[in-house]
Length: 287
Image 1 (tube, one colour):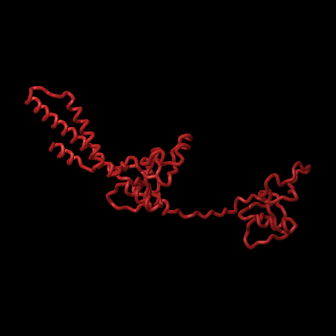
Image 2: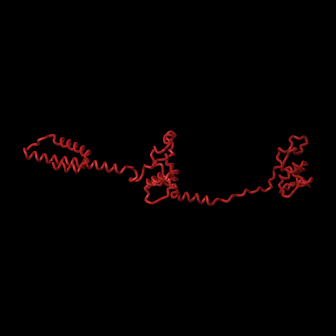
Image 3: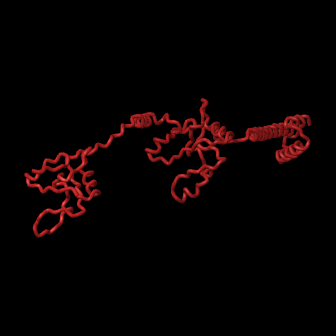
């Protein structure tokens, strides 16, 4: 009785299995031996392997005698009893999983996830989930420009702008280099100009970049006009009272026009001589 040499195989000739001799060719013999996968083992001339370890295409077909003869290049490939090597499972990366949980739990506090402008509630993670059309931009590397960005944020507390961002809600369309391309492609612009400064949706004191001297000048001009009107009104009232007392009628119907004309002339002369509006009022009061 001949037994099969394959690991875990209990087939034998007694059970009706056809037993196959190992090839005499050394190279083919090594291939068969390697397929058997028995440690520290070398086949001999008496070693046999049963037909159950060969696929049907390894046998000659349509033989007249019906015998299951192997092809000259047949190789055993079926070994169900050989345990497969278990692939080593990589340990779970607890740190990365934990990091993901922490990120989702405290997304609001992540560096760069929220807009740095005071009173702005834009959040990068929330905006992405909701599909909001908002982009976030890092602070510029230029020191002076970065300082201006920080100033525009109007934050009461000091903060490091290195890991901070400002959202696109605070930039005008012409602050972007790709504004036209974005409009054509129906997308958000994403390239800021190098010298741009956030100017939209800021706290009131930071919205307008107005020259203080120009503001003072405007206020002074308005005040001078009000003083001019009040002065003319008082002069006209005094003149009317004087004329009424003398002959009971107003001597000139065009008194107001004459006074305004005179005042304009005096104001022009005032610009050339350097006299103030108060000096002019004093001068006219003395006339």
